[in-house]
Image 1 (tube, rainbow, N blue to C red):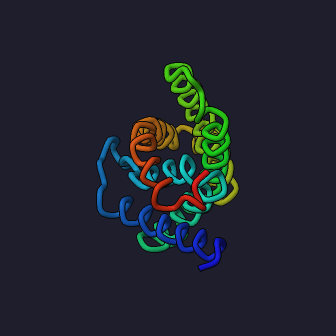
Image 2 (cartoon, rainbow, N blue to C red; image 1 turned 90 degrees about the horizontal axis):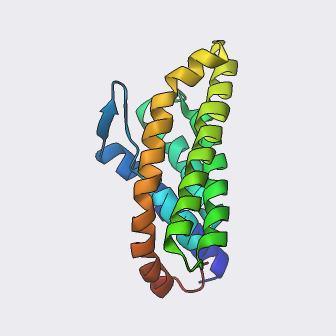
Length: 178
């Protein structure tokens, strides 16, 4: 099978896993919000298969998830925010994967997670929703604060999972692994 076909199939599997984990394993943390376990899949894909694969999984995973549960409600901003988060994670993983100091690597990755989530959720998602719902930015940003916190927690929790899964991803898909 050609490499591009394998990559497309692998991304489709990642999108499906994102949706399934987001739908089936909902862990409530705030009044109206839960930990999005689909972020584990997005993070693993960014880590093991690169920026583009992880971003595609995060973007289309959210699109499909939202279409299944609620139509367009919340989807455009969340999907655009995932482009920011996926791109940042993929790029930081590319640069930190071979660092000798695991503590420094963890600190850098956590800082990027917080920064990218703040930019993706608190800025991009909030601004998109301001345009769609004609609400003031600070109202939307305040409503998205719980999503920001929960997403940061989920992404940080995903880091050890990435390190555990990565050797298996390299062994199973050596031509797609980064």
